[in-house]
Every structure is written in structure tokens, then in C-alpha cells.
Image 1 (cartoon, helix red, strand yellow):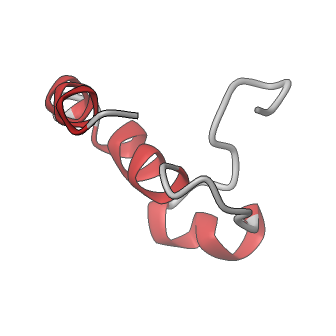
Image 2 (cartoon, helix red, strand yellow):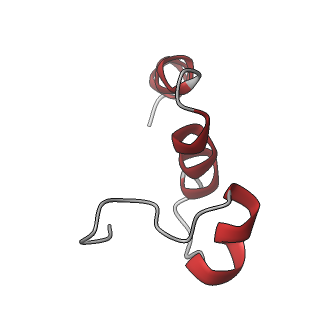
Amino acid sequence: MSNSLLAEIKTQLKKAPTQLKVFNMLSDKRWHCREHEGKAIASAQYAGGGGI
């Protein structure tokens, strides 16, 4: 993903702080534990009822 695309996405998500936290966490493309890392964003469910 290009730096300009990342910057554009982050700019758009400034109005949605929870989604921005999720994006920042998941943008490293590594595995993340919902139970533990979800505490940092106050949500263990990052997406809709079906998950990601």
C-alpha cells in the first residue's frame, strides 16, 4: 500500500476514531488477538457481526 493511500485513509478515518485505531493496529498485516489487543481500542469486535 502506498504512503499516499495510507495518508488518505487515515485522513478519512479521523472522523471515526475507533476505526482509525483498528486500521492503525491491523495495517502492519500481522496477526492480532482480539481479546488482548482489542482492549487498547475498547472493542473486541473490529468488524460487523460476521467478523473480518
